[in-house]
Length: 340
Ligand code: KG4
Ligand code: ZN
Image (cartoon, rainbow, N blue to C red):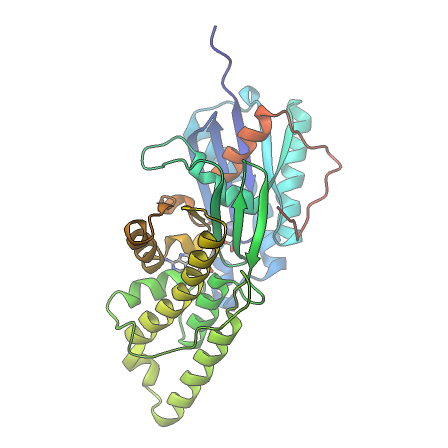
């Protein structure tokens, strides 16, 4: 007799997306996300509003995930949730929900590290996803993190380098705000950059020792450049928007690419595995793919639907925890900072 498949309901609520997914073994049956539009008006995520929005969205999004997967909650094998890192108030909504449901259904509870989830999406069994072999170089690029990690096994990850200040996604968003773009502006900068000249304006690439990166210098240089130009021509941004986006994007991508090259060489890792919201960026994807040949790398890019925060990544990570019987307890605390 074949072993019974595992059926995991996963909840992700670390920032401003309320997400639920159903994962059967390594396959994703449903992957639902309720975005919180409310933050757009503030130009960034407002933590208190995020946790309130999670409270109102979590039940509908879980219902939607169960319905789309055509699964009855009584058939669930385990409940997984994001333990951290993230905004504490947001994390607490997901963990309280997951704990109550696990308690009432009498099934195991599985807490997951959000950053590990971003990298483990490459283990989902689905057309278009190739799974890397251990060890590999994992790179997480998001609104809150920019990390280079040596991944030895599903849950043995060594942090090699990180940002000393802003995350790459934060740099996209903050510079976008300077240009009057809506939050989060990464996707819009990417779109506008398609028609711009990446070499029209030059911004500095910081020299950071070791395997860390820094993004605050570019952000400051970009902000100062724009305000100086605006003093000479009030329409400077509008008249140069596409070139500004292309030049900014080029610089932000070059910073992480140079570190990836350095770390891959130093640790003899030729599989480069990307995760996180900025993994959707077309310039980053293009530059990485072109290095498959020139650097003899195998590059693993997630499908776009698994780049920004989602619960499928929590579900696949939980599947491997479930196989090892690594369950959590009801007293596990949510952690705004959580190491690998
Ligand atoms: O992983 P994610 O959804 O949330 C965090 O854990 O932070 O990443 C969100 C970030 C935002 O900063 C957003 O601007 C950025 O990912 N982003 C992009 C693109 N799509 C999303 N940045 C550049 N180009 C994109 N196409
Ligand atoms: Zn994320």
